[in-house]
Image (cartoon, rainbow, N blue to C red; front, side, top):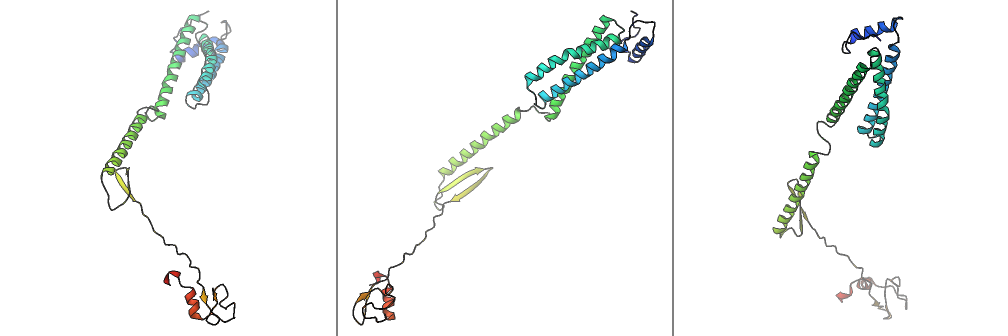
Length: 236
């Protein structure tokens, strides 16, 4: 097999050399028939790996164990595709193809790690989730509780004789005084009517019960006796 005259980093000249070699019928092999499929397989496997990484560690739609297993299955396809690409790119030179494969895989992994770290940092606003912010919030909560306890203890020592039972609540440096108010209500109990004696026959009866007519003689009850029957008994 003829050796390539250019290094891998000389992309333009190297690609032109591979195309000319593939079109030359006097030379054995068709490097483009290996390079193109290998490149497509490598790119497809890498795209799926990146998608799995995103769904597993960024979206949380896949379990981490499942994500790692899928990446382990796809990684050999990626490496194999890169090797086929490198094998055609280096014109069937196996040592140089292996070296180029190692370089491409290494830089790919480094690029994926860098992108993942930057995405985490930018998505979190430059802060690590669950870090110092939670500690500050927990410390602030304990401080507020301490302020409430101190304010309540200090208020219990001071007397408020004119306010009755007072509850002092600490709320952002302000105090709220609550006074217990007792309202008295008077319920009037209806007084049952009194019985009177009929002025005609001297029989006792309750005018309201007998429709203000004496049940014995039928005489109507005088108005003054009606008023007397409706007065409370304690006025007797």
